[in-house]
Image (tube, rainbow, N blue to C red; front, side, top):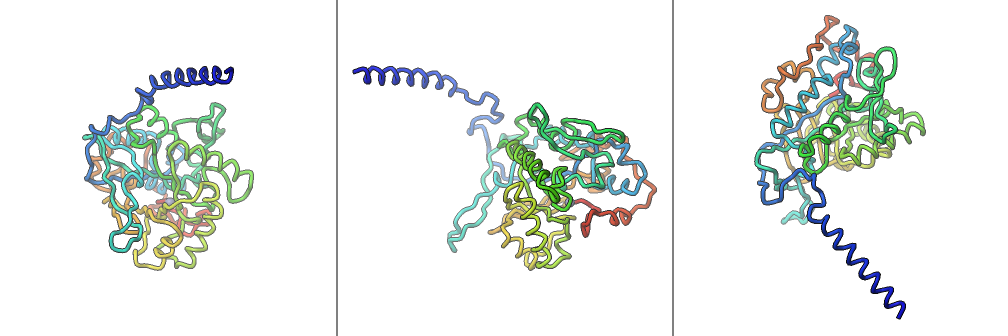
Amino acid sequence: MKKLKHLFRLFLYLLTLMSFSCRFDENPFPDVPYPAEEKLTEYSGKIYNVFFHPLIIYPQYAFDNDRYHNWLSDWFVTYNEAKNMIEDLYENGFVLVTVEDLVDQVSDDDTGKTVFRRRKLKLPDDKKPLLLSIDDLNFYKNTIHNGTAFKLFIDDDGKLSEKVYNGSSIEIMRGRSFITLIDEFVDKHPDFSFSGKKGLIALTGMDGILGYRSNSSKKEVRAARKVADYLKNAGWYFASHTYSHINIRKNDAAYIEIDDLKWKNEVSSITGETGHFVFPLGSSPSENSRQFDYLLKSGYSFFWSVGVDQEFRVEKNYIFMNRLAADGKCVTGKYGDVSGLFNIKKAVDPLRTVSNYGRNTVAVKEESHGAKESPSLN
Ligand SMILES: [Zn+2]
């Protein structure tokens, strides 16, 4: 009898608990940015695709007439430029999506094989999908004395921050490097991200990743893994950008395999496996080539290259994408009219200058941190 009473009490307790939580069920996520399904419409227009490099936080050290000046001027934007560009993207109705939001894997009617198919994406009427990525988030030795951050780390508040060398000492900042800028922007404007995802981070391995020399010490590997885990939880995902920033078109399949196995061994062991591959230098090979065949066999299905057309092409067994480079050439009008995305006249940093120290990057090539072709960090 005692047992029955006890069970009855337990039942009452659970009932109370359920009705209590039901009240919360009415609106469990009051901050969910998107309206109910019926207010969304199917989007069948262009998929937009933009990428950045790590940001120049101190333009005076980037544009200081040294040998890296023109290289940084061409391929990088400053913090102020990126901030303006991100605000423009948001105001122009773009919303961050992932490739997984755009395609499904289904069984082919004829062959029974699994194939990719464009997914019917539903968005609010005035929104357009944008794929966002950042290349070379490694903090190479030749950028960290030129005004970029040199390390991402988790601070005492448990938030991602950056360390920046300001010419004489190390500063701790948040919201100034690309990742934390986007994180803060999405916190402020949750409707800028469609499914909580933010963007793709393309990494090489030769100089370590995320500011950690994970290529040389186990301690650095552990520290890099902490940051990588944080990034994955915050809506970022990773791609191979090859181990040594190699030109895929100019190297044979055997060499690409050696490089890729190194990447898998040192980088994906920290970030987790990935199906995303970002071509260094925007150098994508013929899709009938041995090089491309190797990449498919090696487990990559999402290929990101470079091109102002922002092509998004769904093939049976892979997706091919071109990305517009949001770099110095873009903000100075070299890629033509990008007004649908950014107002470059408003974005361009008054501190941006071009050096007279030669217009080529030969000098940079000599210090290309062991990479075969790293001067243009595309
Ligand atoms: Zn690159």
